[in-house]
Image 1: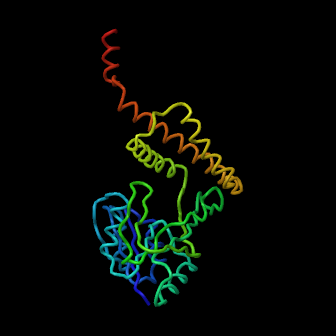
Image 2: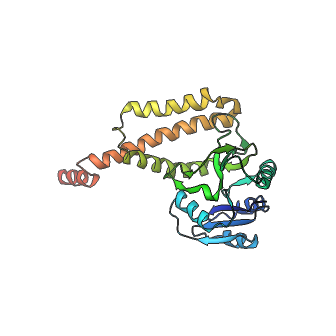
Amino acid sequence: MKAISAIVLTLNEEGFLPGCLQSLSWTDEIVVVDAGSTDRTLEIAKTKGAKIIRTPWQGFPKQRDVGAKEAKGEWIFYVDADERVSKELREEIQALLKQKESLYRSYRIPHKNMILGRWLRYGGWYPDDQHRLIEKQAFKGWAGELHEHPNVEGSVGTLKGELLHFTHRGILWMLEKTIRYTQLEAELRLKEEHPMVKIRHLLTAPFRELWFRGVKESGWRDGIRGWIEILYQAFNQFLIMVWLWEMQQEKTMKKTYQDLDREISDEL
């Protein structure tokens, strides 16, 4: 059987890491790439016999590249701390590794997103394939600042077994993540010289998301959680446009708030 190395990125994941590592106990090696955890993350990783690599956070692509560089297996398997390898996926990968030659050099894996305590099947949340299992010799590195993806030589297959993903764990968690990711998305669009944001952008961006999640992907079929996600993802798109508008204003407007404050103070 070909050797396989699991790669897990961590930063203060003491709550989710034990279950993740347990679901990876069948792999030949577990490489934990830690970005400076201050909780029990490293202690848990050591207890499970993981190889620990400490490196400052440089973004998902570079962190994942560090893991690949340190991995010794013929195949590398990326699993996040809030993900679990299902029994079906484990058995499918083990059968794949027993083959003398693989039909594909890398594989996408269905993502079973557990949102607000339940699996959402509709709304574009499933199968949400993730490119995570890669023959190391075919791996060329990760790319993309926000929606990262691996560059891999050769053909790509899709497995049937699923990665279970515990995400959108509560409204506060969602809001905190929204602030970070919508700002990053807006920064990327600013770099790409997105047209100046107009009123139509504020309206059409969330409307397109509503149509995609709610109508095309039938998100309403997931009940109240489905409706919450439809509206919340539309809100995300609206917020990206607002961030982008603010960034464009800061880049182009001649007067700052400090200038305005001085003008008003002079008139008082």
